[in-house]
Length: 418
Image 1 (cartoon, rainbow, N blue to C red):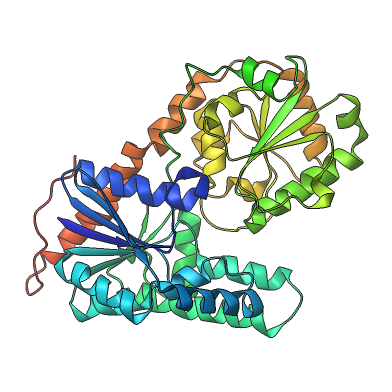
Image 2 (cartoon, rainbow, N blue to C red):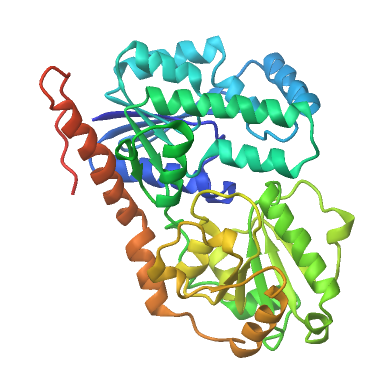
């Protein structure tokens, strides 16, 4: 089958976050099953990368047009990080490029509800359209609107995304979410039958494996930490609101809960950032930026933490990564949304007020503890790329194949899903 995936992310490297991990892993799995997969995304310039049956095409926008959209975003919609790329993927020159690829595809998968141009082209050519999301975009926008001071710009952003999402859900052949909770939310929000909505969980990054060349001791030494230093780690793109909020909380927690400082607790923060706010510059926090061997840094820590308080939808891949490596994890309820009960039982969940006490207790008990191999195996069996791929094959490809075999409908090319 020829599958065209259209996205608004410029980079599908794991450091870009859970969405990037999801899209690339599903695309890769589909190509490994014998499908011809084209992943189209925005870029600074037009480039093409081919790897067997998976081709990644970056579509560059006109420089002057890009600067204009960036200026509009900064002044009118500063909270919409992907606004520029959404507009870029809907501009006429890009749509001319997309039209040829969509026309030749059997199935078109759209990774963002704002991709209205590709959606309408797909409908024009009567293509099977999949609306894929690792969360409910309008719920994230609504939460942002509720958290900000009242104003017309957040309200307009929320209303626009809600409208785009509704059109995308109504005009698509299949809607995909990452958890049963998101399926229920999507169904009630847009008044669509739950049978139309598939649940395909987020995978963790399969490239993150325990390092054989870099050990925890050398990482600790490079960061100025001894083997006896109680160390926690937080991983996330710090340019994203819910991760930035988490670091704000970590700073307040360390500053206000004296026992953490008295026990010389250190927190490693791994992830991209544009600049460090002054309030984050405290001695007990170590900011590394993106790292090449994330597994080694997680392995060098005693406890992994996820103090998240927003981003109300989608399974959090940072938590999957912690658990796939068998690490002791402390998290708030918002970080555990959609997580399977057989995995969730291994996480110590607690409120913001209890987090410092629980963290200190875990650091005291689990200093230099070995990874939990049973936990690691369970996570890999549920959220590994192959497991998620098989779920996609069953819930999306086989469902669509069954629908297209109804008399009077155009037939989908035969495909086998192993």
